[in-house]
Length: 296
Image 1: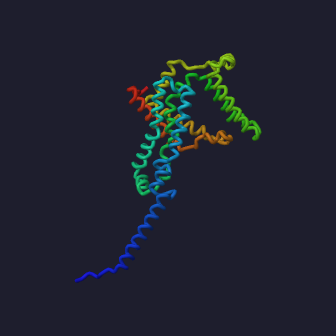
Image 2: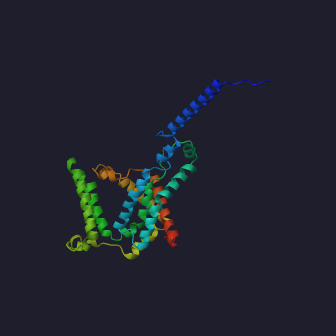
Image 3: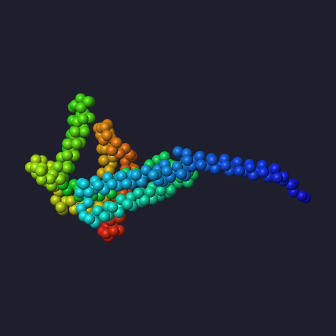
């Protein structure tokens, strides 16, 4: 039995039809990939697994956190400075590995990611993850307790209390003045003694400039916060408090200031991210120095 012959015209039609189908399939694929909510590229670029904005966050937030750690005295030695530099260099790669792992280990999220759809849920936060690193040095910063008490007393009074008894038009101005004055008192009480032209802060501010924790108390607090058992738990509770405080309407309605404040995230996301960041930093310290504090 002979096979039917296929003419050149039919072959050309068949090839053209195949080419048209391939073009249509390629267009559909690209349309899906570059769609805002679906596609494997969208899953990467839409902060599901990675986002270009994380590079900006890496640099800007790293510089801010690192500068803050130095300014408030959360870094005591050159070795501590070097460890924090390395921790911030590893910050984003480790965080991305954690986020990818969390999504891929979750059965529902894994199916969504592999199908090219980004899960519409935030399980970990880079902002609070980095806060977990900064918080490990807070006992060193709080050794000079007086400036912190003075600054926060002024800010709390001017932002949360005074506006309740003032006309609406003056409440916003009072908040800005309180924040500026509190910051000025902190800087003067902390660094004013090093400026020869200024009067001694102790003679002007009294306990605000002189109140300090003993070296033994500071060392004990530092050991507790930098222990693997107590540290992550305490840091997690601390950032939950900060998450609620920094997102209160008394602060978020202040012009300009509101742009520097974080959004309120779920407490589980905040505490888990910060606690994980603390464990990450303590692991870096352990690997570099061999010093491991399991329990305070």
